[in-house]
Image (cartoon, rainbow, N blue to C red; front, side):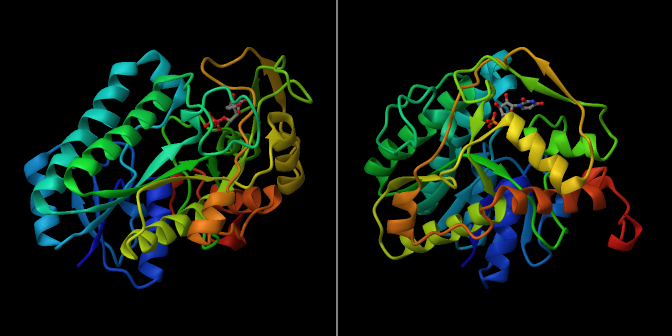
Amino acid sequence: MSVVVLGGAGYIGSHTVRALCESGYDVAVVDNLSTGHREAVHPKAKFYEGDIGDISFMRSVFAKEQCRAVIHFAAFSQVGESVVKPLKYYENNLGKTRNLLEAMVAEGVDKVVFSSSAAVYGEPKQVPILEGDPTEPTNPYGETKLAMEKMFRWVGNAHGIRFVSLRYFNACGADPSTEIGEDHDPETHLIPLILQTANGKREKISIFGTDYPTKDGTCIRDYIHVCDLAQAHILALEYLCRGGESDIFNLGNGVGFSVREVIETVREVTGHPIPAQESGRRAGDPAQLIASSQKAMDVLGWKPQLASLQEIVSTAWQWHRTHPAGYRTEIISEGEV
Ligand code: UDP
């Protein structure tokens, strides 16, 4: 009986697959490789190339793997792109998850842990943000994640599927082994973009917005290590396997850093000057997102292990300097960089 991981070749998915394999789970990955990387999938995991929106394909995978639980990462995740191409997000994130649920119902797969996002909250009225706070997304990406949560709730009620929705704040860092890490094309996230500047792949980093109502005028985010997110998925899976009720949990460190502070930390860690240029706001960005993860700590027993921004940036830097072209890099040993 396998845990089927949808989107297991992506950034957070591949770190979770690795953690599951290292904890002794049988794992099967489904990924259409539209944004994921085959090389990112742990060698102990089975791999199926295919689309979660393909109902007969998903039914055959569930039947073959005798699957009762899935972890679902397969979604598009760029806030800016979602504002420009909302239908792409509705089709992929919502439409395909609808088909996935039909396949789960048909094959009796009754547990799912899935990626949600801090983007469901929109501009928070207060920080730290609690799970019961208002959800008013400021971009289509957040809207699709919120709609996915509601779809799981209604379909779960009707068909006996239990779910855990994990609302990640800003995922970052890389596995300390340096074997897997973050590789998006195009890259849009702050920490990898700053590290590409340190690597000489970019001339400078742009600061999107300096007139936010924050301490230094730049956006504040709660950065959480991808390996800590991976552990939370395993804990959520175990919670559902123990009979836990459907629920929603925030995952963050509970500490906010401004864009300027993140750039400064990368300067300290890499020793590179990192030229920065102030520019206008990016559409859809809330000023401040900081999590309360107390509920995940109390109910799931989760505790982040790589919580300092220095540690997070250091692991990301190890990945970027050994893999300057991501998974397309010829292996560079530590001694050569
Ligand atoms: N950001 C920035 N310059 C960049 C990329 C991002 O100033 O080149 C800012 C972005 O506006 C946001 C923060 O960095 O305030 C984190 O953005 P990211 O895309 O990493 O994550 P998000 O918060 O959108 O999930």
